Length: 603
Image 1 (cartoon, rainbow, N blue to C red):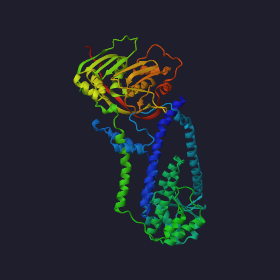
Image 2: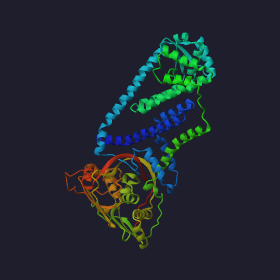
Image 3: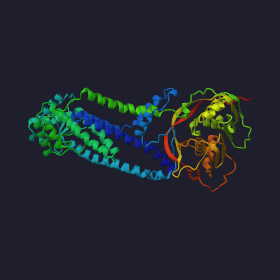
Image 4: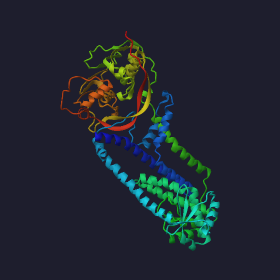
């Protein structure tokens, strides 16, 4: 039970997390290419590009994909086609998700069992790393907080007067509080909502007026740009993704570009390059650097590179129209692509692709639906569909089973009145007019569904619509040894169902998946890729929960016990006898909701 629980969690979290990390990495690579093309332009443009890439780690594309999915529901069903370009986008953006159609699943593959057992340890290691990063930052924060508590507010003097002039030059309306500190920390802006400037007392005596103006101008621009808030966002990214080196490398790029952006603004105010470089070196000589990225100082980033840039007389270029258009297009595509993926990802499943009210388009030479004549104690079900004469026969079948066959859905994908769906059993005899028989034989793979839908519409007055819900399920896939199935070209398919037994003389694997779903209590999706009809004989020893699932799904439960009391389980028998296995996954499932249905009128 615990293995299944952790397997469900792993199946739900791992693919989504892998996709999010991959998508965020793609955005970071794109950001790097953009900044490379803008290397000769203002640093503030590159800074905002890196900040957007950082925030992407906190915003999964699934939110935008969900928006696209909601928009898709407003489209008419006939428009639901999936172009080839969409598949390429989906494979690139979600490489860790099966490119499947409806559902996913839960149990028991030996390949994933190891990861399932390791899941609690993986979570514990991540949590320890997360707390360790927060603890280191907390210790550094307390160091700065202690220095602030020991500092004294300054309301006048040389530093305050110069700060007010720089605030006016920088366009700040709210004055910055200045605290004189006896610590050796460099001048820095502390706080986000109401930032204050911590100023070491002893350094003013070593700075000339021009040096003082340059340093304070630098700090004013940190406040105006709200660099502390942006740094706090990225610090949370680093704590959450502490195991991913890319986020730490991006943090270094953010500090580098924000310091360079402030340098450019200070020089744009008319400050002398040599004086400005000297002021930074004097601060480095007498003070210690800020221990936190969210406390903006003047000595951040690579000092050697900064000095070279400051002293070089090269002017950074402003963004021209072409570059602005490039950045706008990149931002637009970053939003448009996941929304587009969501639009096509919500393409209806086979159940949704059908019209909500199914017209009767097939002509029958005879149709009969009546309560089953099979005695109540006999739970056997018989069904046969023949392509040779276009006939369908069923004995003791439930309405739910007919809907499952007509729409190729599983029991868990049907929502409707339980009494009529499962508690009443019917005998059905139907035969198409001969003019349709040849057409059916040529177009095998959909006309049997159309035949059943017409019966359901005419005889049961069935009206349905489809809704997306998340359900735990199973994927039916070939085992590593390959499938052990016998293909048959028979145009008649016989299906025998018993307690601990499923056999057929020739049936598509979708029908096998439906029967497995009824016994496991969860949708089973055929992802084998095998399209023909196959003969098979599956025997196993059912567990007590299987009868409960069968009863809920409306399937008959044979009164006699299975032939092999100590035989293999259903999962093991599936691998040993048919060469198929079940894999866990979790995805949105299209659920068929019954809007209206009536019991057939007695003839």
